[in-house]
Each structure stands twice: as C-alpha cells, then as structure tokens.
Length: 265
Image (tube, rainbow, N blue to C red; front, side):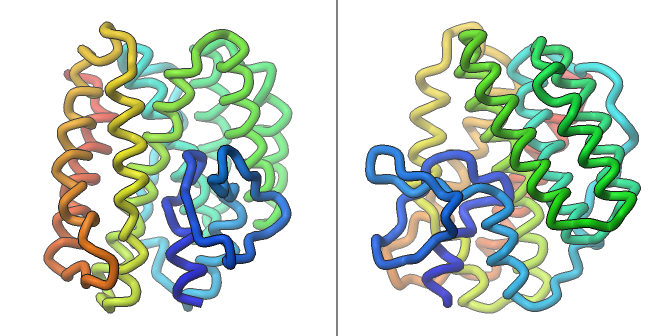
C-alpha cells in the first residue's frame, strides 16, 4: 500500500512523467511513455481516498471566479494549473460551490490561450456534476479538461506553456499535500513527498523554456523555489523526510502560489 501511494502521489495534478516500479499496478487509464507511467489525477485521488479522512477543507484556497489573466503568458499558464488543482482539492472537500467557481475560472483562463472551445463542455459538465454532488464525474471532467487544454495548446505550438500548466498544478497540489501531512505528521505520510526525479524533470523543463519565458519574474521565482525544495525531498532511498522539511516545503510552495496568484510582479 505504501509503495502504491508513493508511486501515485506525485501531486494533485500529476500530468508530468512519474517513474514507478513495474510491479505497481495502476488503473487502466494510466499511460506508458518512454517506460514512464503517467497516472491521471482521478487515479491519484482514488489512492488519496484510502489515506483516511484528511481535512481538505482546511487546506483549500477558496477564490472567486477569475475573469481574466493576471500576468504574462507563463504566469497565466501556472495559474491555470493551480486553479485546476484547486478543483481536485475542492472535490476532496466536497465543496460544490468552489468546484463551480473553478469550472468558470478554467473556462475564462482558457480563452486567453484560445482553447476555450476545448473546455466549454467540460466546464459545464463540472458545474452540473458539482450540483449533483457526483464527485467521481467531477474528477473525470477535471481530468478531461486538463488533458484537452494541454492537447489543444500542443497543437497551437504552445507546448512549453502546457508544461507550465502541469507545474502550476504540481505546486498547488504539493502545498495542499504538505499541509495535510504536516498537520498529522508520520514518516510514512512524509515519504509520499520523496519524488526527486519529478523535481529534476521540472527543472529540466524550465531550463528548456524560450528565453522570454525564462525571464518572466514568476518563472524565475518558481525555478528558485524548486531548487530549494530539491534537497528537502531528494534524500537517499529509505531516509526519512522530517517534519521540519515537510513544513519547509509547505512554506516554499505556499509562497510560490502567492506569486502565481499575484498581480504585482
């Protein structure tokens, strides 16, 4: 069970590649790319459901509908990822109103990247399913919205921005996860954060961004934050991630989310 959790819990928006041992059985929606297993978010939450009953309401960041972008393209891409991750957290908290706010925000932010057609139906389904408290369907539609946005952006030659959407989701998901783990610290819970390969992947992607994206103030802050997190979760296999490290990761990711959401950079 613990190994399955470690394999699955790369983040609440785990759309980047996460390598896991071959003996771990993941649900059929998972895909294999270059010998790397890629679970979708709803599968991750299927595993999270077995953790017990974390107080997800306490780690929410409720917000009103975002009507427009708040920065340049890289910041908006990071924000879109964070908003989608917030949707998954709202599902765990069974907060229908916040799920609907997320659906509206996703649709509005998607317009900025000219991919609103790809998410309009998804956003509507998210809101309808939230009204019905059909949380499994909400998860599935959030999965679909994330997949559709990334695919559409790839077609528009915006693959690097699509990667930033993934990263924004990971940052918000990790902030929430560390808040949950930190409130009831256990070594097994902290071990869920042991994902050094994931941080290496993100750093590589940020290093490959076009120069104008790399020079974005928020991107600069995010890369520095990830470099600060790396030694906190990159301990040797079997080494414990301390409660102090969990709290430090939470502080770093929390600061990054504030920067991603800030209009003043």
